[in-house]
Length: 69
Image (cartoon, rainbow, N blue to C red; front, side, top):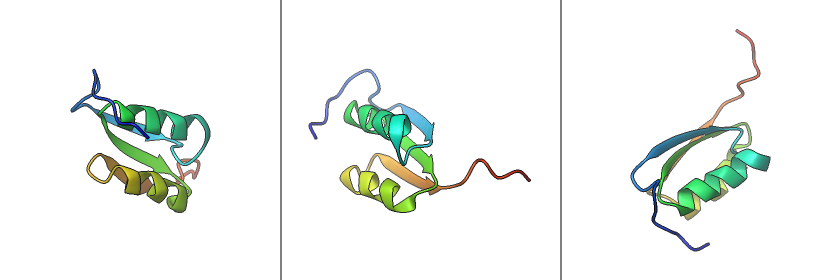
C-alpha cells in the first residue's frame, strides 16, 4: 500500500477492534496517512500482519474488551 503524509503525521491514534472490519480499515487508513497507531483487538495474528507492514508506526495489543471484571 502507498503511504501518504498528511494531517495525521506524528499523531497517535488508538483503535479498538482493529483486527477486523471497520477497525482494521481505519488502522490502515491512519497508518497510510502517517499516524502512529495503537491497534487493540482479539486476533493477534491479524494485528501482527498489519504491524509487520508498518513496523515503526504500529503498536499491536491483544485484548478482549468484552470481558467484565
